[in-house]
Length: 160
Ligand code: ATP
Ligand code: MG
Image 1: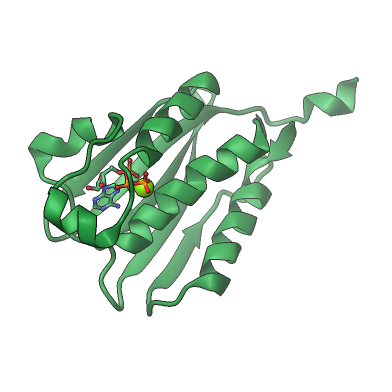
Image 2: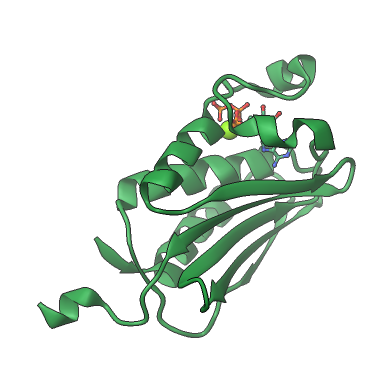
């Protein structure tokens, strides 16, 4: 489906903000323009659900989640990011978190639950959409997960 990414993203963020049980605050920064992406909305929802639930899972009480979309006009892509102020990921483990069943610090991870599949599945889906996914993190400060999607400024459907 062709969807305006900002609307799609905002709906998902709203759902998490309504349902949250922790005292985590949300901050969203979206470009004020139409950015159409051709996505499988179920799969993209699954990708964002996993990234956002990770961000919440590893956030401290009172932490902030930041949601951003930036346009990279030259590359014809948007860069979507989710930042948290949580425990972070050691530098040497950053590239592994997209592998199947990989979990940083098994003891901590077991307590928080999960299988270690979320990001591996997210990576598969983003790649299938022609995008890339990566993360940056500072231990004790927080983590940002980024991914890209090719976009269009006009909705192709309007032409058919
Ligand atoms: P699942 O998603 O299958 O329920 P999971 O959340 O443990 O399990 P992934 O989403 O694939 O698995 O994440 C892999 C690992 O990367 C996590 O176990 C955690 O160690 C680390 N990780 C992912 N996101 C964050 C984050 N925002 N902050 C800190 N660590 C993270
Ligand atoms: Mg997960």
